[in-house]
Image 1 (cartoon, helix red, strand yellow):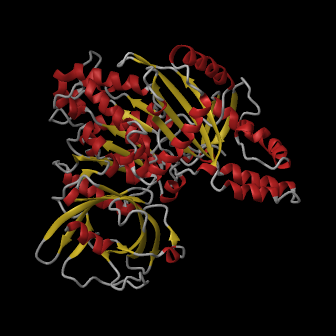
Image 2 (tube, rainbow, N blue to C red):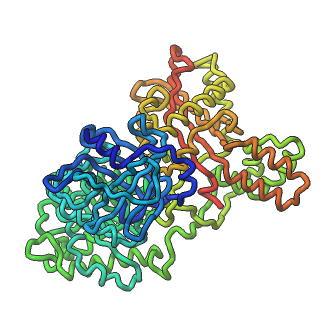
Image 3 (cartoon, rainbow, N blue to C red):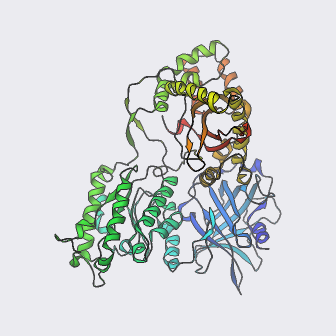
Amino acid sequence: MYRFVLVLLCIEILQCQSQLNKQKSFTLMPVELRGLWCISERNQNYSRQIGQAFMYNNETFTLNLLDDIKDTWINSLVAINKTDNQGTFQAFTDTSKGPSIFVNKISCFWRRTIPNGDILWGRQSNGTCTSAFELDDSPTSVRYTRNEMNCLYVDDENPNEVLSNSSLERELLAFDRSLSDAKRQSIVFYGSSSIRFWSTLTDDFAHTKTNLINRGFGGSTLKQCLQQFKRVILPLEPRILIVYAGENDIAIGETPANIHVMFRQLISVIRRFYPTLPVAYISVKPSPSKLDKFSQINLTNHLIREDIRNMYNVHYIDVFSEMLTDDGKPRKELFLQDDLHMNEQGYAIWTRVVDNYLTTNGLISQGVNHTNILYLTMSDTYLKSYISVIHYGFRFFEYLRVVFFHIEMASIINRCFSNANYVFSMKCIRSMSTDHHRRLMLMNLPQIASPNLIQMMKNIFSRMVINGSFDSTFAIKPFCQGARQALIIVSHLVGNGQFDDLPGFVSQEAIHEVKQNYIQLSHQQRRQIPVEDNEIIFSYPYSIAMPFNEQTNTRMIEISMIFHILKDPDAYREEIMQSSDASVADWLSKLRKMRNEIIVCNYKFLRDTNRNSTDNSWIITGLNHWLPNEYFH
């Protein structure tokens, strides 16, 4: 019942593609709309929840309805039209996962923001999606609200995990409502009550000339910070994130090992959305009330500090040692009477060490953004290869143009292989922490774009071992043909959001990660994922390895494939062939345009070397689609 109420009021199915083309492209969710919403049905006599919505930073939003809370709809705002200056909008959406009657259809609906911050949804009575807003005169309305205390919230990516069964809901709702005033690119402090009670935070860091946001919620654990990250931190697009949590976990009996695991999971979630965001973790402080827990505090700090050493752009801020006496006891003069929370002297120490972190790492000096410039020592093959493209690619394309221009990008990728290391200065491209655009990515795998000469020699040896000791029928050519077909099938399933059809093709671990990243992709990026046979302009087995599975005590075969994809290659071929009489500059411009549209697909295939295994026993354990143009200028 609720599902149909929502459909009638929110998503009137229309065949409006021609109208859609006239609207404004929608690629960034306004900050005030981001995050978690309760969907309620109400009239003068009652109000009841019928579901929830989560608005991501891009145009993606999800729906979970109470009649089937574990079924997550995935939708995209593809266009939006502001029709007046009173908070009324006309929006077009595309549903990629949900009921079949809505999937891959453009829908049109209205929304109007009312004075209390709720969003009222309306629909067109005549089904024409005209530019005039029609007030819904029915006694019952559907609203997206942040004014209800008793709504049920779940993790839209893991609906079994309930997020609202917490005494912290009042504080979290206040964060939701304050998004309308929040400034992007702020320094955000996140964590438990030690952050929440930092009342002088803005004054303490006024010299940074940067906006600061306090997102501490009292009594929170590191696990709760992990659970609430998407709701509280993701919408803010922080410039720097500083975290304090873990002390309450110790207080309720969590082991240092479990707290360490929770910390790693939090960093993993942060990196999904903000790959290069500077993150600092403040060590668990030595509260006098936790004197009997000092061994657990010390071990927790040690595990996290050692792990951070191997993390990119994550730093450890030590307050523990700063708050001890010379004989290793807590400095009681730094704490309030409860021996748990700090006074001004305690926060003065925190201000000094945090300011030292910001200054030492150049995060507040001269207003320089942390992702503007990166100096990279390029020893990885794919980085060398793209430098090779810059230096030698266009010469080789001249030769290809003369001989009918068959688009085989790999021929130019590795023209200039060298063992020398390059020190090169380049701009970091479009990280989510500093730009509205999220890069195309399905799994966090190494971006490999070209063959490697040394790896080719290793592959020859691996094939000899496979044929001689494990499978005399194994041949690389039929495998590559099968891998090509697997790419086509799997890319279409992923592109259409058909994750339930992936088991048998893709491992469960890979499906889980792909599904999480898919939600973050824009409508346009999702349409780039499906691959047609004629779009594969190059394919190559990058590596053939033989890892050992200790659980099954068997040897495996793992093959990593590189595919280069060019959408509509015939059009590029015709355009370049017709430019034979054009100027060199014009011709090079066309080549650059084509090069920038190349999509690289990295797929990992795995099978058991058991002699009873057949060719259909291959399973994909890793897959990624990415655009080199998004990583390098």
